[in-house]
Image 1: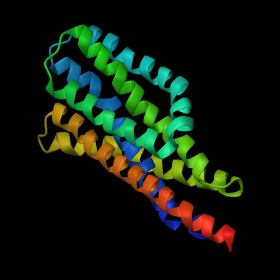
Image 2 (image 1 turned 135 degrees about the horizontal axis):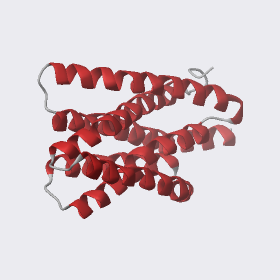
Image 3 (image 1 turned 90 degrees about the horizontal axis):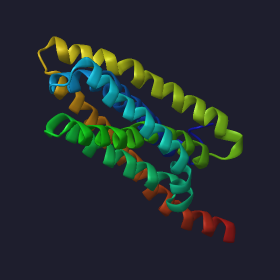
Length: 202
């Protein structure tokens, strides 16, 4: 049913988004403390800084619904993935004082963890009610495969000699793919409206 009635492309794009979103999220979560420790923080300082990530995620839940209602789920989600790339790069590459690092981590939690919340909402909005449960269920299942693959990929990259900051940066690639797939969803929605209008007129 998810591949019929013109929903095949949408379903594939959503699966790509969920898989890459969880890859991005788990690489970010697993490797953030290690990257902070290598930057010179003590384990206690790294733990305190990491806690700002969860605060950002909480705030994202509060405001993301407003953005989705205002700009549409695809656009709001694409912006979050793109912003997440910027914040991951800043954490891994920039030399910043502790307070600024905490602020960047706060916003990274808003965008990276918030984007997964937005993906759930996007999936719910793009399927009709009769397909919503199966659509979201399958997308979440595919996303979990990304969550399982992320630590395996991280371990492999570490085994071949890649430094933890570079493994951390690999999350950016998955965020870019998710943003691109979300952008394609937005374009598909724009193109589908005139077709729907013509069908209704006929």
